[in-house]
Amino acid sequence: MITKRIIPMFLLKGDRLVKGTRFSGPFVDVGNPLSQAMIYDAQGAEEIAIVDIEATSKGKCINPEVINSMIRKCRLPISAGGGISTREQANDCFAAGADKIIVNTSAVRNPAFVSELAAEFGAQSVVVSVDFKREGDRIFPVTHAGTQAVDRELPELLDELVEAGAGEIILTSVDREGTLSGADLDVYASLSGKLPVPLIASGGIGSYDDMVELFRTSDCSACALGKMLVLRDYDIVRIKAYLTGRKIPVRDA
Figure 1 (cartoon, rainbow, N blue to C red):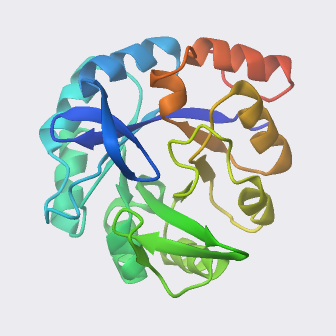
Figure 2: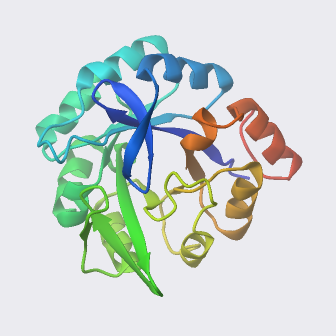
């Protein structure tokens, strides 16, 4: 049976990690990227995802030096993103030691960019991050830190991104992000069996049972955790022990 992955999600603002709510402030400083990476490396996380949340709005890319500092001290894989809009920027991230790159706005607005990256670096190295919101019964993708709606149906967009070469999808609920109120289970359940690549659930997970319910009601291969790890009394070792006790397959911490 394929094991589920637990992925700490780092949000980078300047040279510090932060946590907000629904993609906005006030942001709480939660530490240094390197020291936090070393903690989760020791606890047995499968990988770390780090995204510069200011990069796109400032017309820049995540600083490769941040990636390299983590790689030099940690054994676990690093997925990195934030503002990646060219193959050269992607190459800089890989050269710094990233195992995967995370692309969001540039990929959603132009799926052909995903094809370029997959052809250059391999689909297994390209993670596309898609954010979504709800308005009543309508569920729709958004870009630019959740501020701009995309006139596409979410399943249709995901299919196109996978067809273009996305090796994994991170799917984040803007409405739930940072709320610790639980994942948007209906959305993840509706996608079960429909995507041929791993789907990572992100946004709202705040307890052990939130994860159990997510994995029991969908075929998500992983969940990304933020505030639950840094602002509540949880760690990767205890999370995995709890999931194992509930018959959710995970790799030993």
